[in-house]
Length: 616
Image (cartoon, rainbow, N blue to C red; front, side, top):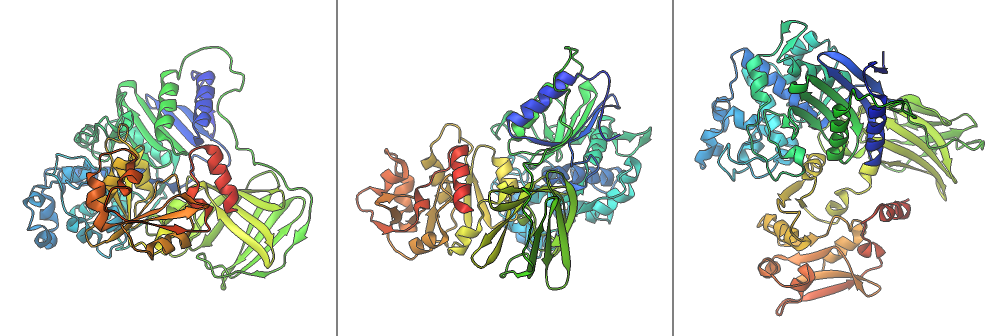
């Protein structure tokens, strides 16, 4: 049964969970809770299903750990193994640093490799990601410094392949998954063809719940030993100290590809709200699939639900969890048909478009030169579609290598927003919602794929001439770095973000700029709306600092020449970066631009909405 609630479960607690989740922006898709191996809750909010196979992001790591546990049980891989013994062909790369010889498999599994930050951006798109891993210099003794490093998960997957003779997906398909009844799944690869390990798994909420139950039962399933008990105990205890790593549930320690919970137990989690929670002391196993950007708040809501799961507190007015998401609107009765229109060159490779609307539905035909596909969205209700295309996914799918042409499963509903036709879409094989928007323009029809995660991208800086991006992270850094994995982004983490100023982050960013670069564009993340041409013009002017002006007011981004780095890094006075720019002996040039975006801060939801309106 898709939607089931045990008679002992408090509907009031479920309703409160739903309200709390909505209040912090969590779009719940599916929830499963087991207590002492008995199902307490199995619920999906339509159009989602507990059986949808979808991108699990970093929750993939816990499945990679499970494969490592299988290899451990076979006697072929041990946490104490020296990593270089498994990769002798790369030993010469590491000969200049003796710390590499002390790197163990357990350090890799516990994000304790000695790297200062994630090196997946180097590994993911390399034709030899293992080489890229070993080429990334160590900053710490292995085992002494926690850095959330998806490349370590990638290397763990390759360790499993070398030890067991099968890839992680192959090994799980022949051992763990048959026992659990998992018959279908898929896993993406990096550019070198190796399993991503730390992300890329397509699995369901049902599959995640089964993994949680397997670990709750110390590796047994239906009375059969599937995973070594010793492995479960090792994976589920903290091997890394990660205090100061962010919010409390990300500071309680890290095991073998599992986070320790601040309230006990452990979990796997994936970006945007995917959770696999195990609470052995309470006999609880839980799985959640969702879309959200505040996983700490999501966990807080879940903890409260689990605490009050059986609290008998009377009737509940709204009955518990929602059964379905209601589309935002309906079509307005207008009927029209564009006929076939030509597409301008676009990343998806579409060559032609036709849109037809009647009172019941909107239909869109898309041609890519070799096939025609139809998307149908009824008025005010959901219909499932599958669309095969290049580069046609919600934003996060840009962040890792993927197939040249891949399917996007989504439920769509149509409505009119003024003169704009909107296909409201909820992806079923990713966590993300998005919109397909169609508007008449002077030369035909304009189509836009919009996702809240795809409003701003790295393309603006790269198109302006930047060769690399340094991102200084602080609050919720783990979500940000996971979302940007695979891009040409170098991370500098401000561990003291809660008690330092923006200027301190600017300094961290400057220190992280490789020596071969002579100039940088500095811009706060809340000032994202400058035009690409503005950045390009700024980079063409020389000075210690180059600042854009709009109507006489200075804005962002600011170009900083390397010759000014020492003065900026040494400055301790008032006014932050602007104060540093005013020091004697430094020369600031100003460029008047026709770009009001240099002054636009995005500090509130209203600012965000206004910015979206400008970008339409």
